[in-house]
Length: 210
Length: 279
Image 1 (tube, each protein chain N blue to C red):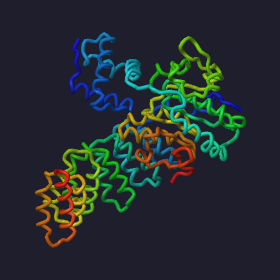
Image 2 (cartoon, rainbow over the protein chains, first blue to last red; image 1 turned 90 degrees about the vertical axis):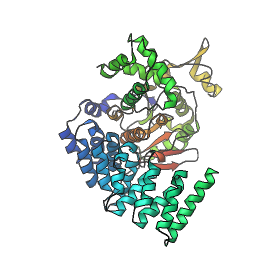
Image 3 (cartoon, one colour; image 1 turned 135 degrees about the vertical axis):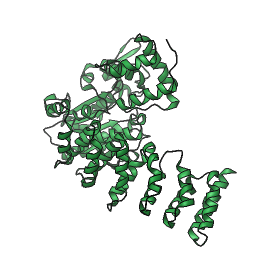
């Protein structure tokens, strides 16, 4: 027994597979295969095909393996087109908390694409979707994050959405947010938590400005 | 020849190179990248960056892209670097793998990037010197890199005094001979490691290595952006045998890259493991 060189014959099947790119139809079939490894590989290989986004989103909804779901989300992030980000946004309406959380994490990785639909999501009829969107803003590396939060403080009429935005404003807000924080205090003067969170945010911003 | 690369050209190149290799250059690397790009513009006989970039994008052989990749990757390393992980390998990781591994099959260890060979050769020495199991098990050591030039350097096994300074003196005597100002690694060790060309951003490239029992992927993913890093981790996950381990550099954490792996805290090091069963 010792250090030995790899026996290439062991790997022939996978080397052959690697050399023959599959068609979109083949990958679509493989994406619904019975073995997670098969589905993971299809989710990776499909990235360069036109029409991949819709197939990945469809599989994401029915996928039972957490590992395969991660790979699908990475592929959607890599594709990063408008359909991918819209499809992920739809997942925010899902009853499946894991799917929602996975979609939120993936959307955080797509700041430019997210920027195109943030306003639309923040105007959604469903307050939960608006709260999840604020959750995405938490880690979205985009220069407009503060302005989007200011808009929520000024215009959203759902207390929970406003409170979520207030919590985040306490972390990311700058002097530009001070007027909006004062206004939201007036808008919800009977809500103790809003008063508390707005005061906290204002104190933090003012102390870091000094 | 235009001596400048415009901001727009740099941005276009950066995106292209990222798509091909997963490596993203921040603005702070602009000088480093521009210098090498202009060198290649000149040496390939092009007048402008634009002309050169056309060659780079559409050349069927991909030869120029490889040449440029070799220039733009960093290969600074030395023997026994972060050797607490090698200690963990022989004291904790391999003993655990041996409990369930099919004895008729070799244990496969993969180093990516291989750089100029210091890491895989260090592992080879560590196994021979510090792991009694080497008498009962076959071990395959594969080392891969995106830089074809550095692979040739690794195969030659010729090192400077600085590169081998942390090797114990008795190992130095056993495995090296002095050639002028340099040190030549012995043929037995050189032939024990298989060096191969791999682009971690190309999943088809990576799949050829399944099944891997231990991966050393240290200080490579720091050059990738978040999405490529996650995709690379998933590509490695795919080639790992159930229960296989991955060792990252001391400043890297898999927890910040992908949730697929389990954290394993061994006495000597924190490493990451592919679960024995997929959820």
